[in-house]
Length: 82
Image: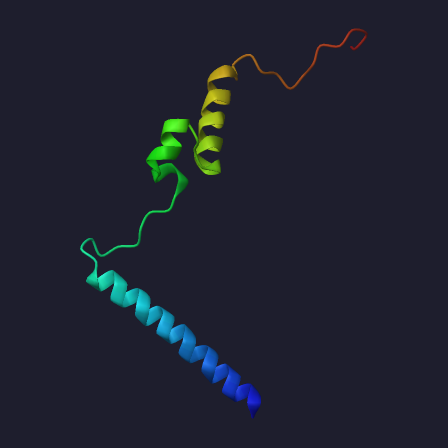
């Protein structure tokens, strides 16, 4: 019986939290959640700090520019091979 009471209390608390968030969204002027992404923070942009995904995309683009796939060969010319 106590499990049901704890479960009901947890469901009620989660419902109250969702209701509070919904009310906050509806009453704010913009009506949206704040953007907490690192890339959207102006102070982080000033320091040149980006999120890991953006940094990875930039590094992959740099690597693509540096590599020349036209000269790439899977067969090595080793001395003494036929």
